Each structure stands twice: as C-alpha cells, then as structure tokens.
Length: 134
Image (tube, rainbow, N blue to C red; front, side, top):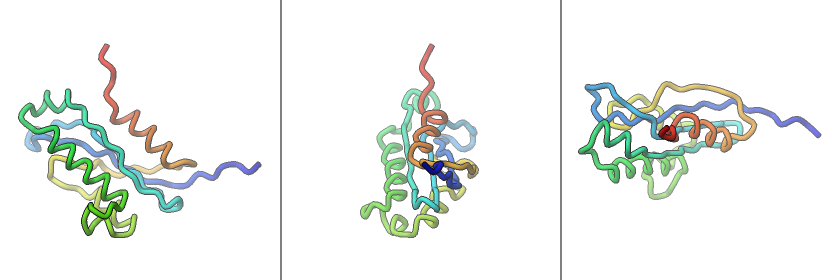
C-alpha cells in the first residue's frame, strides 16, 4: 500500500482585537489553504468569556456574524458576496490580508498535511478552543 502523500498548506489565525489601541487580542478562528488538495476553509469559534473580559460592550452576536461571513467567503457561498466567487487562492489572500478591523489575521504559517480538514481541526483545537478552567 502506498504511503499517503503530504501536501504543503498555508494557514493563519483569525484574532479578535476589540480595541486596536490596547493591542489585546484572542484567537477566534483558523484559515487553511492547500492548493494541491483544492482545499480552503475557515473554522471559527467565539469565546464569549474572553470577549466579555476584553470588551464587555461589544456584541457577541455581531462579532459572530462577521466571523461567519469569513467562513462563507472561504466556502464560496453564493450569499457571501463577490469576493466569495473568486478563485480559492485569491479568497485566501483576501482572508489573510492585514487589516485594522476587529478581526485580524496573524502572519501566514506553512506546513505539510495528508488531510487538510484534519489539520484544520487540529490547529483549531490547539490554537482557538478555550482552555478548560482549572
């Protein structure tokens, strides 16, 4: 049986920066693109406890809507606007472009993966899911 082939991928973390001037942030998603596997996806999760600690007046519902819109762009959802209809590489570039909004991507990282969806899930679990309170 042939060994599985690992493909290169790139990813960025989506961070919530409620008040840019303070520089405080927390991770709320991961964008992963693997050109060889024709894979582009965003996985998001909003930790409301962290949001309330950093920005108690910011609406979790509004923020969740913005995060969901990024998921729609990655998935090429018809209701996600014109950017969602671009080729995957251009959508990835748009999703990870530096911005000064409340949701900001990290620098882009690279790796190798045999299964991009499993890699996305693992990165999300490691980098975004809340650490259980002790």
